[in-house]
Length: 360
Length: 126
Image (cartoon, rainbow over all chains, first blue to last red; front, side, top):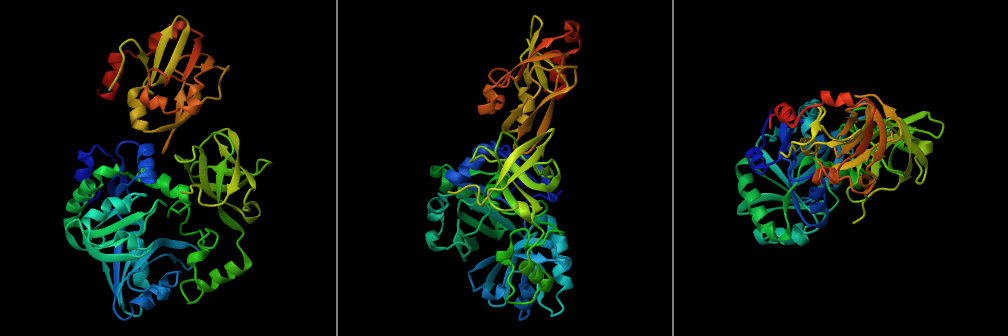
């Protein structure tokens, strides 16, 4: 079990720690609901240093990235980030990731902790052009500072005008007394804010100064449990639940990051899929009655036939009702369609809705 | 950890208050703290007569679902409907407003097999 540079800090704060993707991670501090509300209404901080980071460099860097990723990284300029995925050869997804263009011929790829080795080996297997690859996952820490008050709360600890960083843009500047920190206007919550990349040796100082600066804004540490409810209210896919090696980006609703302006792994087949349409789709649904849908519960039609499976589900803290994502045949995927979720012995009625569940 | 001495307990982390042949049942302070924020309590067995150790309902926290086991055979005569709107009462007041069901006990001698507060303390290492 690996620790992040902040594990002892979380333990001292009384966090409940759980094993997650091989790391000892805080799942909650005070309680999921209060942490969720803190991010929706104020500002909260997540240690997500378990995430993986690869640097791809050299004159073939872009060529390699274009080959392995579904989005068009050619469109990236320095200071911009892009959500993308790594398709496999069989129609599925190796991982989803964010690609940063740090400078000319230098890109940072941020991948899921559980997929670090798989992604690394996959990208390396496609690196026939000889781009330089460095796995810096063990050396870098990542904090997500999220919420509507994030900009205001953090402005006192950086000389950079935080309000000027547009969504999915980043700067490398001073933060919490450390030079050359990546301040990225990205996140997995839908409530705005930043993700901060720094060296492991720097993260404790940053963590402490972030909490000092945020004290008057009600800042709190946030665990992985609230990270999951926050992302699910936005309908953001979680790798391993909603997308995996056998789900295609098209059926997962990730057509918007699948660009046929270039060739990439399995792009021919995906293009055909996009043109013809898929047999099944990832849908978002809300329960019409009380109950909580959960990962792997069956989705059934009005006759009781199984038509699909729930990939993520929870009680939405913001909406106060059961929400979920799941795959169903395309015929059931239109907005306002009625489906049922099998919860223990009961079929609970649900309605297909448009994302996001939570609108700020 | 709050473990009131006047209550009875089970290894499934339920508490039982006996009043004549009626038992009031909920989950312990330890159980609620392990589960975290409770978001739903489902009891679909109202008016049914069940044997001891049968499932009478489920309690759902944000991340987990746990079955609730009936500590004593009997008829489920009441469900705490206030939990439908305020399931968080199980977290904030597990032995009070967070009670879950009342049972008309079929065989009062079964009370003998329940754990004392001392036994329960030993079980959870409190």
